[in-house]
Image (cartoon, rainbow, N blue to C red; front, side, top):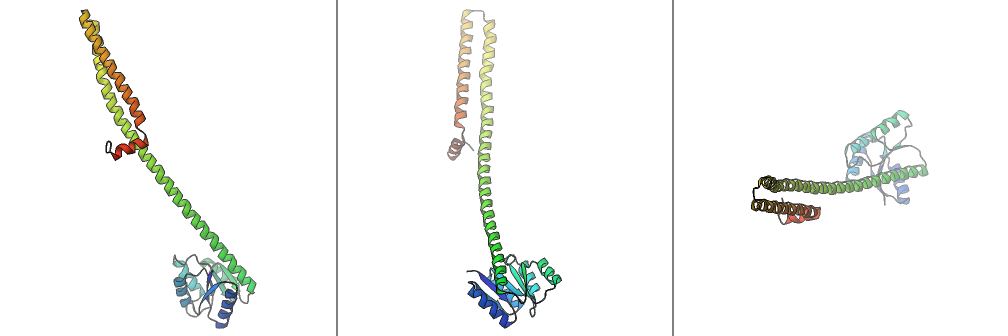
Length: 237
């Protein structure tokens, strides 16, 4: 049940408005002046406010300004009730943030239509706000997931760079020995020397093949899932 605050200093009008709204299915609360009305709005947080413009003490414009300055009550729809049909007064109220004006005397159906329209607009706004909040949370979750994937990719890239540097270093040693063995083989003076240098070449070629096989195995090993496992066992940082 929607709750409506009626701020009206004339008792008969206030009672009539309360009766009409309650018969139409609304919950009502009332205030007889602007100051009490503003305080009631902040305490009760109604779904909509009907507010007379000409009030003792704090007038309707003062009530409107007070509520619009408070972020908790800033979005509550306010419909002004006024005996003045001056367009300048209406323009002033709309500039302050009033949602609608009803000029006294007004028809009951006119009042109920204005209330229903403003409540419907507020409901639509609230729904959009909720949907935007859900969308924001979804985006934040996607961003977090993407960042995790980027972090994992960065770690894998870093590991691959370290391993590549280490493998490159490991490959250089056999290549150095191979180059040296080739040179010595060319200079060999006997079959015995040739056989010895040929054996060196075979051994170093075998080392190269072993290192290349290790590279292939490491490429298969470095997946995001395996990286997490290796980190868990503190095998990598």
